Image (cartoon, rainbow, N blue to C red; front, side):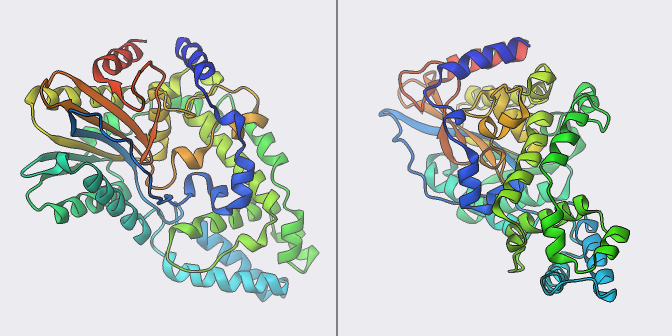
Length: 423
């Protein structure tokens, strides 16, 4: 609870907050953002603040989510395909429904057997992030540098790590990169306490309120009426709520794979925004700084934060250069960004109707989302170290004072986060 109060105070002190804007306009302008954490990594050129005179980068601490993937299981595609095939056989599809079925058939040709797998786009995303990191901070990667890379034991994370590291090795074959995907590292790459697991269980304390919210934001009658032509067949065979969400997953997931079809035209923009609000709700309450969690969800990132500090201490003590690369999931990146206090990542909001205004999941954890902490050393005094924080390769702030934004004194940063770990 102390963290919620402390962060709420910091929230008030920041010059600009997400509440001054709205995600609604952004989602309606780009319907792919309605996918929340399915939003494909936005690749844009972002100008970096010049390194202060007399300093140079020497170390990068990184945590990245896996890249774009297929829907989490084959059945997320197949049950919809099977239902639509049955409807066709019964003569219960409209012309639009028949067209939608043809599109699902095309998607299934690519997706079958790949549920939850990293997609080709996911590989490209991590190769691109690695290349930009290398080119933006070349001093870190000069010569025979030791780099540590670790991922969770989930295959899409290990393959994301492999794509990232392979690109670095192509750019500098002298790099020595140790790559591991092991249960040994799950304790900080993908930690969830028993208390948070109980909080997020199907019978958890927030689930009934969420169920009502999802129900009120899933208005399926119009969509179902445009797809199916036989109302009696629908009564006997179709769960409108489930079908609308089935088409939602197909629609927002297409941006992450290769097949060039779309399902966005099946929806009204407001319908997609309503579904986005429900999906965004789940990630806010289940992974971020929702008041009802009393800080336990952000606490899940404490082992990761401790590893960040310990790894940095080790490199600083050695006097060498290098990088620590970590690969995991949205359920780890979101609480980590909140625990760090990155701008717009830790709001404490009570009213579900306001969640989307203060917690914007596609900005925090799109596919391949990442936090990078860049360390700079004074060339004349190696004890003088400053850092900057980047969320998805964009400079951002943390809730401590600095007279040289976006740079912070590492001594201040370390002290602040050690106090966070002690809470």
